[in-house]
Image (tube, rainbow, N blue to C red):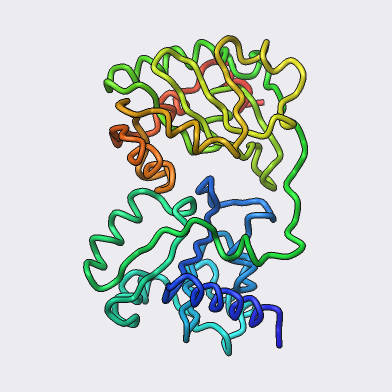
Length: 311
């Protein structure tokens, strides 16, 4: 029996034990980036496919993988077609294929950390009563993955204002005004490049991407909660970022976010995960869907950034 078949069978056993009929495996990780570190390559673990985009579904009696046009050759080289049916996303859109090929009443599990708010919203609307999307408390791959790679232990790089042209503290105060204008108490930030830009930091957690694996909560007053392992924070960080940046362990992020009862929180439904949204909603916070407040300011390069790009 191949390793992949053992893994598929392990997921199917988990489905049986959790009263589910199928499980969705996207390529994205908790940070919803296209490029992810080895320890978060869940799709590759389950299928053998190592491309940067794709989605798989494992049910009690079938397994399928869907990729785009970049990977039609690669997927056939890496994925055993005796174990997986292979589909092109353009010719067989994932949600349409599921609706057409999975029996009505199917309970389909998904890890809410790995799916965007908008994707879950549109999928639920499309499936209607045909498919019941069910958020799971634990990802079966995380439970079954033996010898999972360890994440990078490299600390954050503090990017000098010579290169950024503006301090983190000034950026956060300016962004806070956008949040206040939206009549929100804070904005939940998922995009890794946005957090790197806000705090003027860089990292090496993701191969070939200068970012750190983290989440953030930016308040209307410019304060910032950074959810990251404390061993990633180098000496001099507090002085570098300025006042009112709090380091909070990822393990307690859920408890921390649950404290916002009655508050209005903005998040970007295109780049925030369904898991965070549900935490706020369960805490009786109100969600306002707004674009990531960093998107436009980050795109407007100052003289230091322009000169750096030229160099």
